[in-house]
Length: 104
Image 1 (cartoon, rainbow, N blue to C red):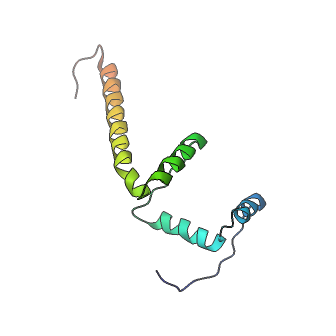
Image 2 (image 1 turned 135 degrees about the vertical axis):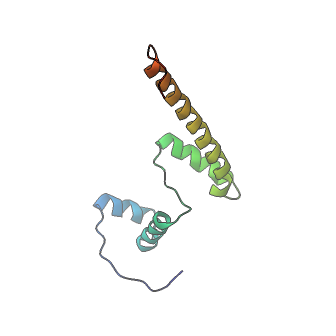
């Protein structure tokens, strides 16, 4: 990683700053990490409910490899989701063709 850094002005809401300070977070490093994640071809960011986040944190904390252990399960969940979407689209397609001649 390059050590050539550029200084920028960053505006935060007061409550954001206060929470990060309470957590002893280095804001510059935190922002660089977030930017690296956003620019990465191999990182995704998901918005989830509080319950899902808590469950994720509990499970991943037990994992010896962190997110790497999670990836196969995520891939399977995405395949299941795609299968459900395909079935829904097929059902929609069938409902649109009810009572009509076969058209393709």
